[in-house]
Length: 243
Ligand code: ADP
Ligand code: MG
Image 1 (cartoon, rainbow, N blue to C red):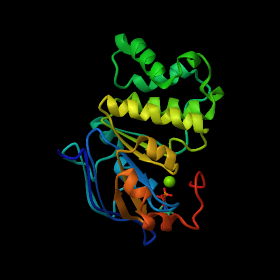
Image 2: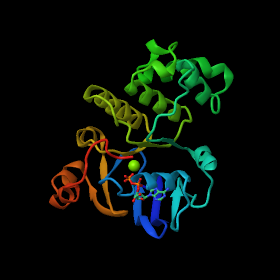
Image 3: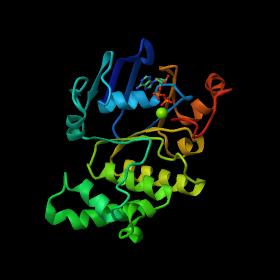
């Protein structure tokens, strides 16, 4: 099986310091691939390199068989990538349905818009909130709306940067069920996450990043049982301290 995303020898420096250093990583079709690691490990930078927000200092990225290393972000989106960034950015003054509508317009013909809108709001568990301004939603609901806006682009690869930051355990669990449903429907998902219960709930594979480098990779069970992985977290601020 060919990987959907192939990252090779990828590096990115800021002012001479390596934020991402010589990373090789494959993301296979249909998997939920979790990226974990202490604060400053380079997780968000790696995501931004994949999306094209940053260009690499060195190395290459292939997506769906195409070299995208130098491709601008909008072309990557057209190829089937979509990202939910760490900070939510819904249109707070607009009703929930209109947020979804705006996101769907890019891909969905007008005659199918209403049906797609309904399907997406159901999937997100937001059908009852459709008429409310998005800014009135709970933090969790805003995160789901934002995931929905990324989904509206009908991506092959969905990138989620800390989708459970600031969520209650109940909201976190529901987010996990949503992600699993997407994968069951054939989507490939890459997730940056701190919450190990959440990682346990969803991950088919885990990659640990430390000081910009791949530190370990394997099943959740193997990663959780690895004493070297536990060690790199010691003395490091945990959940939600990331920026
Ligand atoms: P993580 O998401 O794993 O917490 P980041 O990718 O945000 O880590 O950061 C990795 C390292 O790169 C950190 O040392 C951070 O300070 C640095 N860094 C990230 N983005 C920039 C930037 N735009 N300019 C300078 N340094 C940056
Ligand atoms: Mg980050």
